[in-house]
Amino acid sequence: MSIVEKKTGGRVMEVEFKNDRDYNDHTSYYEVEMLKNDHIFELNVDANTGEIFNNKVKK
Image (cartoon, rainbow, N blue to C red; front, side, top):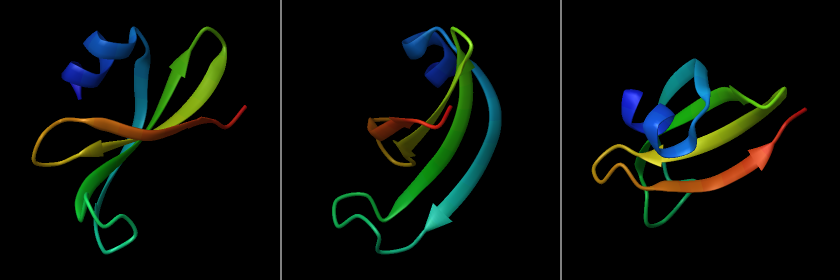
């Protein structure tokens, strides 16, 4: 998850591995909650490529 922190400049708070069919192109991914600039973000990171996709602000 240090790669995510380097790419985004945020701090990872929680990581959960997902292996399902929610996303056709990303069947294995990490769901990451991170803190950046007093906001909590939820990012999905492809487990095979490290690509960040489907990010959203939670708070």
